[in-house]
Length: 305
Image (cartoon, rainbow, N blue to C red; front, side, top):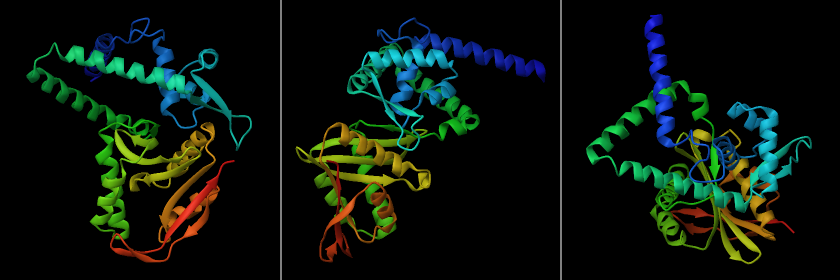
């Protein structure tokens, strides 16, 4: 039995070394950028981890405290990241990616995608399918032993074209199942999604949708909060708070004066969260037929200035 385990372990490490080389991760610099592999990993974690801290980077990546500190200081000097003191504990600082850092991160992702495409172009379609199936099987097997890691939630603040139908369907499904809204709500979503999108945050866990929130530009100083939803499988974990923290912090950075949202009086579960962030009811419409129900619309405002 020991011989078999040793053999599997050796093959595992051999494959890992081979695959790492295939991806170019052992090169001194990654994706033709000035960043080393470790620097790229740290930038990735800061970008994808809500309220990231230096301690979280040390723990997740298994890196020395001094090493992480040097890279964080370097990133800060190069205007790739910025720190913000925690409101709950002044001893802690959260690390966020600046607009410059986000631009560089996205370029790294684009370059990575280009390299993958170049590699796949050298493989015929039949072999590509075999490769994809083998990768899926490896992922499925290893995911069982990495369940704790796969349950972590990451939040990205950019919007892909393929997210459109997913966000609309998640909204439609939730309001139909939980509140009995009819297909006129789906039509409303489809008609209004092309509004001037300012920003969208999408939470994911193990490749699965976990939640979302977004902003629509109302005027130069006012934005509207929309598409706020936490998937049922991820409720009770503070994700709604994290999404709103990202949204409010962005609005403060962009110097907006006001955030407002429209909801209905029957959405009682969200009210405490809105109140926690300082939103207050500013307008109530008379009850009227809407989306197959009799609903009372409410406008909530958060003054930032």
